[in-house]
Image 1 (cartoon, rainbow, N blue to C red):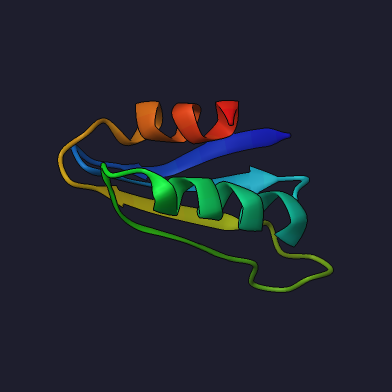
Image 2 (tube, rainbow, N blue to C red):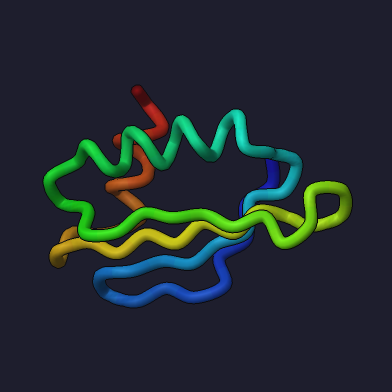
Length: 74
């Protein structure tokens, strides 16, 4: 899995996760949504055959990278 950060703010992150599909991203989004620090967690796969998934996470002020790490550990 290769991760590339596209945008990073104080309370949001937009990133591309190469080599993954709905299986991983749906589960990650589920765990992110359970986190009280997460305001919004969504992903988009522009094209199922050639598109790399994009993940967007917005928090209530918490560090978005730390929030993703917590969800990934579950």
